[in-house]
Image 1 (cartoon, rainbow, N blue to C red):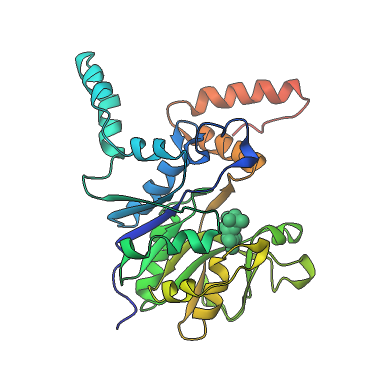
Image 2: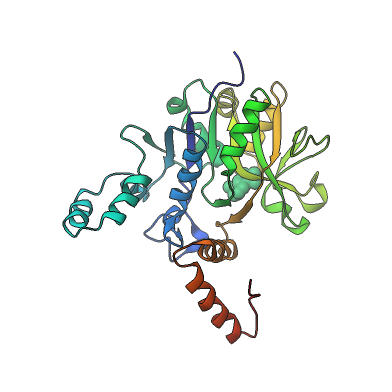
Length: 302
Ligand code: G1P
Protein backbone atom coordinates (compact mmCIF):
# COMPACT_ATOMS: atom_id res chain seq x y z
CA UNK A 1 0.00 0.00 0.00
CA UNK A 2 1.62 3.36 -1.00
CA UNK A 3 2.07 5.70 1.94
CA UNK A 4 1.34 8.96 0.08
CA UNK A 5 -2.37 8.64 -0.55
CA UNK A 6 -4.21 12.02 -0.31
CA UNK A 7 -5.28 13.34 3.09
CA UNK A 8 -9.02 13.95 2.88
CA UNK A 9 -10.19 13.39 6.45
CA UNK A 10 -9.32 15.19 9.68
CA UNK A 11 -10.07 14.19 13.26
CA UNK A 12 -10.75 16.87 15.87
CA UNK A 13 -10.63 15.51 19.44
CA UNK A 14 -13.02 17.79 21.35
CA UNK A 15 -14.13 15.70 24.31
CA UNK A 16 -11.96 17.41 26.97
CA UNK A 17 -13.65 18.97 29.98
CA UNK A 18 -11.84 22.32 29.85
CA UNK A 19 -11.43 22.52 33.63
CA UNK A 20 -8.68 25.10 33.24
CA UNK A 21 -11.22 27.60 31.94
CA UNK A 22 -13.92 27.23 34.58
CA UNK A 23 -16.33 28.88 35.10
CA UNK A 24 -16.40 29.84 31.38
CA UNK A 25 -16.59 26.16 30.40
CA UNK A 26 -19.19 25.08 32.95
CA UNK A 27 -22.00 24.99 30.39
CA UNK A 28 -20.07 25.68 27.18
CA UNK A 29 -17.37 23.55 25.50
CA UNK A 30 -13.90 25.07 25.67
CA UNK A 31 -13.65 24.67 21.89
CA UNK A 32 -16.31 27.39 21.56
CA UNK A 33 -14.13 29.97 23.34
CA UNK A 34 -13.33 32.61 20.77
CA UNK A 35 -10.19 34.18 19.43
CA UNK A 36 -11.70 37.58 18.59
CA UNK A 37 -14.93 36.27 17.02
CA UNK A 38 -14.02 32.79 15.77
CA UNK A 39 -14.39 29.76 18.05
CA UNK A 40 -11.25 27.67 18.53
CA UNK A 41 -12.91 24.76 16.73
CA UNK A 42 -13.76 26.96 13.73
CA UNK A 43 -10.11 28.07 13.48
CA UNK A 44 -8.99 24.41 13.42
CA UNK A 45 -11.56 23.57 10.72
CA UNK A 46 -10.46 26.64 8.69
CA UNK A 47 -6.88 25.40 8.89
CA UNK A 48 -7.84 21.90 7.73
CA UNK A 49 -9.98 23.19 4.85
CA UNK A 50 -7.05 25.27 3.62
CA UNK A 51 -5.07 22.01 3.49
CA UNK A 52 -7.67 20.36 1.22
CA UNK A 53 -9.43 18.32 3.91
CA UNK A 54 -12.97 17.39 2.83
CA UNK A 55 -14.33 15.44 5.79
CA UNK A 56 -14.33 16.69 9.37
CA UNK A 57 -14.66 14.12 12.16
CA UNK A 58 -15.35 15.42 15.66
CA UNK A 59 -14.79 13.19 18.66
CA UNK A 60 -17.06 14.80 21.21
CA UNK A 61 -18.33 14.05 24.70
CA UNK A 62 -21.18 15.08 26.98
CA UNK A 63 -22.14 18.79 26.85
CA UNK A 64 -20.58 19.29 23.41
CA UNK A 65 -23.79 19.45 21.38
CA UNK A 66 -23.19 23.13 20.59
CA UNK A 67 -20.24 22.14 18.39
CA UNK A 68 -22.59 20.13 16.18
CA UNK A 69 -24.99 23.08 16.06
CA UNK A 70 -22.13 25.41 15.14
CA UNK A 71 -21.45 23.39 12.00
CA UNK A 72 -25.11 23.27 11.00
CA UNK A 73 -27.32 25.81 9.25
CA UNK A 74 -29.15 28.14 11.62
CA UNK A 75 -32.33 28.47 9.66
CA UNK A 76 -34.05 31.08 11.87
CA UNK A 77 -30.95 33.23 12.17
CA UNK A 78 -30.38 33.10 8.43
CA UNK A 79 -33.93 34.04 7.52
CA UNK A 80 -33.81 36.97 9.98
CA UNK A 81 -30.52 38.18 8.51
CA UNK A 82 -31.96 37.85 5.01
CA UNK A 83 -35.06 39.85 5.98
CA UNK A 84 -32.83 42.57 7.39
CA UNK A 85 -30.60 42.66 4.30
CA UNK A 86 -27.48 41.62 6.25
CA UNK A 87 -25.73 40.01 3.30
CA UNK A 88 -22.15 40.29 4.65
CA UNK A 89 -23.11 38.31 7.78
CA UNK A 90 -24.97 35.76 5.65
CA UNK A 91 -21.96 35.31 3.36
CA UNK A 92 -19.72 34.80 6.40
CA UNK A 93 -21.97 32.05 7.79
CA UNK A 94 -22.13 30.43 4.37
CA UNK A 95 -18.32 30.47 3.89
CA UNK A 96 -17.62 28.94 7.29
CA UNK A 97 -19.97 26.01 6.85
CA UNK A 98 -18.67 22.66 5.57
CA UNK A 99 -20.96 21.22 2.87
CA UNK A 100 -23.77 18.81 3.78
CA UNK A 101 -22.36 15.39 4.58
CA UNK A 102 -18.82 16.65 5.22
CA UNK A 103 -19.04 16.41 9.02
CA UNK A 104 -19.29 13.40 11.33
CA UNK A 105 -19.62 13.24 15.07
CA UNK A 106 -18.82 10.41 17.41
CA UNK A 107 -18.43 10.29 21.17
CA UNK A 108 -15.59 9.36 23.44
CA UNK A 109 -17.66 7.80 26.19
CA UNK A 110 -14.96 7.89 28.87
CA UNK A 111 -12.06 10.32 29.34
CA UNK A 112 -9.30 7.77 28.67
CA UNK A 113 -6.85 10.07 26.89
CA UNK A 114 -6.02 11.58 23.51
CA UNK A 115 -4.94 8.27 21.97
CA UNK A 116 -8.26 6.74 22.94
CA UNK A 117 -10.17 9.75 21.55
CA UNK A 118 -8.46 9.35 18.16
CA UNK A 119 -9.14 5.59 18.24
CA UNK A 120 -12.86 6.38 18.65
CA UNK A 121 -12.75 7.81 15.09
CA UNK A 122 -11.39 4.60 13.52
CA UNK A 123 -14.62 3.52 11.79
CA UNK A 124 -15.19 7.00 10.39
CA UNK A 125 -11.62 7.33 9.11
CA UNK A 126 -11.44 3.83 7.61
CA UNK A 127 -8.25 2.55 6.03
CA UNK A 128 -6.70 5.77 4.78
CA UNK A 129 -4.16 8.30 6.06
CA UNK A 130 -5.73 11.16 8.00
CA UNK A 131 -4.97 14.41 9.81
CA UNK A 132 -5.44 15.19 13.50
CA UNK A 133 -5.80 18.77 14.73
CA UNK A 134 -5.98 19.62 18.42
CA UNK A 135 -8.07 22.81 18.55
CA UNK A 136 -6.39 24.03 21.77
CA UNK A 137 -3.33 24.84 19.72
CA UNK A 138 -4.18 27.83 17.56
CA UNK A 139 -1.82 28.29 14.64
CA UNK A 140 -1.04 31.59 13.05
CA UNK A 141 0.51 30.52 9.77
CA UNK A 142 0.27 31.28 6.04
CA UNK A 143 -0.16 28.78 4.38
CA UNK A 144 -1.89 27.05 7.27
CA UNK A 145 0.19 24.69 9.41
CA UNK A 146 -1.74 21.66 8.09
CA UNK A 147 -1.34 22.88 4.48
CA UNK A 148 2.43 23.03 5.03
CA UNK A 149 2.33 19.52 6.48
CA UNK A 150 0.33 18.09 3.57
CA UNK A 151 2.76 19.67 1.11
CA UNK A 152 5.78 18.16 2.89
CA UNK A 153 3.96 14.80 3.14
CA UNK A 154 3.55 14.67 -0.65
CA UNK A 155 7.07 15.96 -1.32
CA UNK A 156 8.53 13.25 0.88
CA UNK A 157 6.35 10.47 -0.57
CA UNK A 158 4.04 10.02 2.40
CA UNK A 159 4.51 8.42 5.80
CA UNK A 160 3.59 10.14 9.04
CA UNK A 161 4.18 13.83 9.73
CA UNK A 162 4.20 15.68 13.03
CA UNK A 163 4.42 19.49 13.31
CA UNK A 164 7.08 20.53 15.81
CA UNK A 165 8.33 23.76 17.31
CA UNK A 166 10.82 24.96 19.88
CA UNK A 167 9.67 26.00 23.35
CA UNK A 168 11.70 27.25 26.34
CA UNK A 169 13.23 24.24 28.15
CA UNK A 170 11.17 24.85 31.29
CA UNK A 171 8.00 24.13 29.29
CA UNK A 172 8.96 20.77 27.71
CA UNK A 173 7.28 18.69 30.42
CA UNK A 174 3.84 19.99 29.31
CA UNK A 175 4.15 18.42 25.85
CA UNK A 176 5.23 15.49 23.70
CA UNK A 177 8.90 15.98 22.79
CA UNK A 178 10.88 14.63 19.81
CA UNK A 179 14.57 14.14 19.14
CA UNK A 180 15.89 16.17 16.22
CA UNK A 181 18.96 15.66 14.10
CA UNK A 182 19.88 15.35 10.41
CA UNK A 183 17.77 18.31 9.44
CA UNK A 184 16.92 18.74 5.76
CA UNK A 185 15.80 22.36 5.45
CA UNK A 186 12.81 22.50 7.78
CA UNK A 187 12.25 18.79 8.46
CA UNK A 188 13.97 15.67 9.80
CA UNK A 189 13.26 12.01 10.55
CA UNK A 190 12.17 11.53 14.15
CA UNK A 191 13.87 8.65 15.93
CA UNK A 192 12.67 9.32 19.48
CA UNK A 193 9.53 10.72 21.07
CA UNK A 194 8.47 10.97 24.67
CA UNK A 195 5.25 12.23 26.20
CA UNK A 196 5.56 14.86 28.94
CA UNK A 197 9.17 14.12 29.94
CA UNK A 198 10.93 15.68 32.87
CA UNK A 199 13.10 18.52 31.68
CA UNK A 200 16.30 16.51 32.26
CA UNK A 201 14.91 13.52 30.33
CA UNK A 202 13.69 15.46 27.27
CA UNK A 203 15.61 14.59 24.09
CA UNK A 204 15.33 18.23 22.87
CA UNK A 205 13.17 21.30 23.37
CA UNK A 206 11.23 20.57 20.16
CA UNK A 207 7.63 19.78 21.04
CA UNK A 208 4.78 18.13 19.16
CA UNK A 209 2.50 21.04 18.21
CA UNK A 210 -0.83 19.21 18.13
CA UNK A 211 -0.95 18.61 14.35
CA UNK A 212 -0.45 15.12 12.91
CA UNK A 213 -0.72 13.24 9.62
CA UNK A 214 -1.03 9.56 10.50
CA UNK A 215 -1.28 6.30 8.61
CA UNK A 216 -4.29 4.12 9.51
CA UNK A 217 -2.10 1.37 11.05
CA UNK A 218 -2.02 3.62 14.13
CA UNK A 219 -5.54 2.36 14.96
CA UNK A 220 -4.37 -1.26 15.40
CA UNK A 221 -1.71 -0.05 17.80
CA UNK A 222 -4.22 2.09 19.68
CA UNK A 223 -6.49 -0.95 20.08
CA UNK A 224 -3.84 -2.62 22.23
CA UNK A 225 -2.51 0.52 23.92
CA UNK A 226 -2.01 0.68 27.66
CA UNK A 227 -2.12 3.86 29.76
CA UNK A 228 1.00 6.03 29.69
CA UNK A 229 1.77 9.53 31.02
CA UNK A 230 -0.95 10.76 33.40
CA UNK A 231 -2.58 7.30 33.37
CA UNK A 232 -4.06 8.05 29.92
CA UNK A 233 -3.84 6.31 26.54
CA UNK A 234 -1.42 8.56 24.71
CA UNK A 235 -1.20 9.04 20.94
CA UNK A 236 2.55 9.62 21.39
CA UNK A 237 3.02 6.08 22.77
CA UNK A 238 1.20 4.56 19.77
CA UNK A 239 3.33 6.70 17.43
CA UNK A 240 6.47 5.40 19.13
CA UNK A 241 5.33 1.85 18.32
CA UNK A 242 4.42 2.76 14.71
CA UNK A 243 7.88 4.34 14.31
CA UNK A 244 9.31 0.81 14.36
CA UNK A 245 7.75 0.10 10.94
CA UNK A 246 6.95 3.47 9.35
CA UNK A 247 8.78 6.79 8.92
CA UNK A 248 7.86 9.80 11.06
CA UNK A 249 8.84 13.21 9.80
CA UNK A 250 9.12 16.24 12.09
CA UNK A 251 8.21 19.48 10.33
CA UNK A 252 9.22 22.80 11.88
CA UNK A 253 6.32 24.62 10.25
CA UNK A 254 6.55 28.32 9.50
CA UNK A 255 4.28 30.28 11.83
CA UNK A 256 3.41 30.90 15.46
CA UNK A 257 1.31 28.77 17.78
CA UNK A 258 -0.74 29.86 20.76
CA UNK A 259 -1.54 27.23 23.37
CA UNK A 260 -5.14 28.18 24.06
CA UNK A 261 -5.48 25.36 26.57
CA UNK A 262 -3.66 27.81 28.80
CA UNK A 263 -5.11 31.18 29.86
CA UNK A 264 -2.00 33.16 29.02
CA UNK A 265 -1.71 31.57 25.57
CA UNK A 266 -5.40 32.21 24.97
CA UNK A 267 -5.11 35.90 25.85
CA UNK A 268 -1.97 36.22 23.70
CA UNK A 269 -3.83 34.66 20.73
CA UNK A 270 -6.62 37.20 21.10
CA UNK A 271 -4.16 40.07 21.09
CA UNK A 272 -2.23 38.74 18.07
CA UNK A 273 -5.31 37.94 15.99
CA UNK A 274 -6.99 41.21 17.03
CA UNK A 275 -3.98 43.31 15.99
CA UNK A 276 -3.82 41.53 12.61
CA UNK A 277 -7.42 42.19 11.68
CA UNK A 278 -8.05 44.75 8.94
CA UNK A 279 -11.40 45.80 10.37
CA UNK A 280 -10.65 46.23 14.07
CA UNK A 281 -6.81 46.13 14.08
CA UNK A 282 -6.16 49.91 14.05
CA UNK A 283 -8.77 50.68 16.74
CA UNK A 284 -7.59 47.71 18.85
CA UNK A 285 -4.00 48.96 18.65
CA UNK A 286 -5.12 52.34 20.07
CA UNK A 287 -7.10 50.65 22.83
CA UNK A 288 -4.19 48.33 23.68
CA UNK A 289 -1.84 51.24 23.81
CA UNK A 290 -4.12 53.03 26.33
CA UNK A 291 -4.41 49.90 28.47
CA UNK A 292 -0.64 49.36 28.47
CA UNK A 293 -0.03 53.02 29.35
CA UNK A 294 -2.22 52.54 32.39
CA UNK A 295 0.08 49.73 33.52
CA UNK A 296 3.28 51.67 32.75
CA UNK A 297 3.97 49.49 29.66
CA UNK A 298 4.46 50.58 26.08
CA UNK A 299 3.35 49.35 22.66
CA UNK A 300 6.01 50.19 20.05
CA UNK A 301 4.41 52.12 17.22
CA UNK A 302 5.02 50.81 13.71
C1 G1P B 1 -1.24 16.64 23.63
C2 G1P B 1 -0.20 15.62 23.17
C3 G1P B 1 1.20 16.22 23.25
C4 G1P B 1 1.27 17.51 22.46
C5 G1P B 1 0.17 18.48 22.96
C6 G1P B 1 0.10 19.74 22.10
O1 G1P B 1 -1.08 16.85 25.01
O2 G1P B 1 -0.30 14.46 23.96
O3 G1P B 1 2.15 15.30 22.75
O4 G1P B 1 2.54 18.11 22.60
O5 G1P B 1 -1.11 17.85 22.93
O6 G1P B 1 -0.85 20.60 22.64
P1 G1P B 1 -2.28 17.48 25.90
O7 G1P B 1 -2.32 18.95 25.58
O8 G1P B 1 -3.52 16.77 25.50
O9 G1P B 1 -1.88 17.23 27.33
